[in-house]
Image: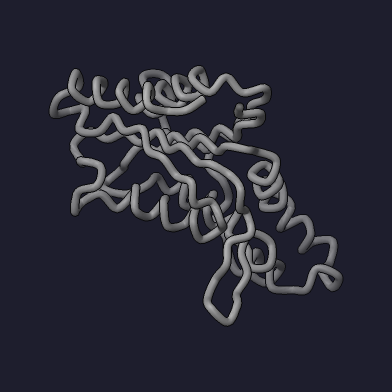
Length: 193
């Protein structure tokens, strides 16, 4: 049974958002005890030189300003750590993920905290979690050569240790909305609560 879900919505739209609607349907299916909501529509600050300098300064040597610079990143990482399952609403914009979702990834992918480097390469530290991606598109077929969203999300989640990744897709909605919704319905039914 799913106890705690981190719900991440990346659609810029609230009303009429297919990914938000699909994310809600996944949550209804999972029926978690607790939901942590993170809405990325208002955007997150992009990482910059100040952020990078703070991040690479050893924790015990950081100034108060550097700790403040990393405070949001620390909060976002804690949200992931607190969740058993991460449900991400990811519309495909111009063949990839929304910029706000990429910024979220940049904020949570931190060496020594969510992954570490070893002799055999990077090792994810956020293991034992499940991710379900509600992925939607107007014309891009998920898994096609022009889909740069699903492979990226699977890879980056695996990079931080989340390897149990499932997709519930309502893709090519502008081509055939009925078929897209039927495909998403079938994937929802197959999800284990």
